[in-house]
Length: 328
Length: 282
Image 1 (cartoon, rainbow over the protein chains, first blue to last red):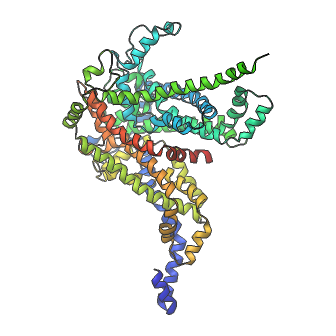
Image 2 (cartoon, helix red, strand yellow; image 1 turned 120 degrees about the horizontal axis):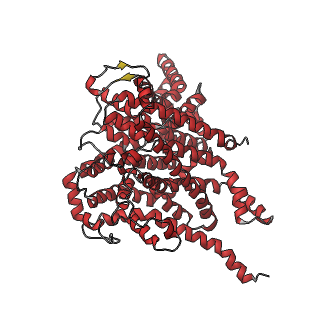
Image 3 (cartoon, each protein chain N blue to C red; image 1 turned 90 degrees about the vertical axis):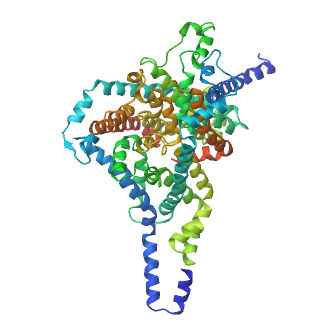
């Protein structure tokens, strides 16, 4: 192209006009062309399926009907889902897991990040990396590993509990017999342990990066005024962490409301007897679509969950958001 | 009066408590990985015997043989790698290109369009699973890897990361100078910008590769035959059988996890900094 421009300079004729026009054209439209792949892909593989699933949620269709033979059923899918006890069970499971696998992540991660920041210097990256390992590991791999660790007879976790049971005080709180984790009543606790183990390191990393961004002289000034470590944490670190809390809690809400892989594997794809007590809404949606082949009903489940996540995000925004944006 | 010596011991206590806490947490974090590698070298009967194995055994090879016999193991390994590789390469290209577009040009609708990119991050991914499956079914891409990597070529996270990096790392004068020298807009991207954003490309490449390597939900519905499935999906199918060979599953899991542990060992700092940079700037 450079070459052609050089020759055009010598002969300003039709070619020159063409070059100028091309040059203007590509300069003007370049940014649009550069960003267009995202928008094309989003329209085709993101927005279109979303809208299509909204349409689907008012239709009845199962693959044996043949492609395109949708039947309009109005709100039937929604009324079915809202009166389906299995849906409400999975909804309850999701909420329970959302709280009991979500809250501990932050309750552990914030002090952990503070401790890492305060007591470590040389090994800071190493220690953070260790805590971060589960986050980069496949959820399926993690669920498979914990599947063996939670075994009822001679499972590592039950043996550790049996060991702790011989300790004074602590022993009184623990059951004397092996726990069968794979029952409807117990599977939730196992799932919560897995999720907390997997994502606490990620939150620790987020909070640590926010703590490191707090200016040192704030702590120094507080120390001069006689503030203890605890007071520094309570009155400097915690308030300044609020924007990051908002961000991290938002991610936890969106992630926890969609928990799929961990319950899917620990419940053996739905074949486990513990399925009713552990399956989440997304897993129930998956089974409605691919096991019972009710695509329309599955779409209605997806949209109900979508709206619910939207409401939770909005509430989180009300609780944290204003402070997070600095307009306290 | 507290003697100076005693107060220094008291001052040390919180620090020692901190260390103890960190070590305990670290052990709890590492333990499942350790047991994965240990169990990979034991038979099923040993894994659930008493006491459970705490040290490496000698059955890794037989577990590996079971794997080869029950699933197309290396085929699945290749599928996993191919998918992750294609997603990573295309993401690096399209996201840096779009990031450059958003960072270095003033054009109409720039801000609202960028807001749309960011808004897509809030859409819960798994909710699209069913219509996405139907779309892929409709266009006849079931059992083909492109059904999984084409839609993932230009993710919002990558565009956001690249835009942030280009804004901070590349002066506009440089772009203007290249333009005066006669570079076309694409040449500016290819010859000037791309070499300068290598650190960000490295980080984005790592994040993308790890995410793609671990993909499950969409692979699970799109890839219906054993030959096309990736390793996480095919390992999961081993669990459904009766008399589950947990030793073999752990061996497969270890082989799935090991490459990422290796990559992480080499680039942990870069990866962690990259993952949090967007969050901190917000």
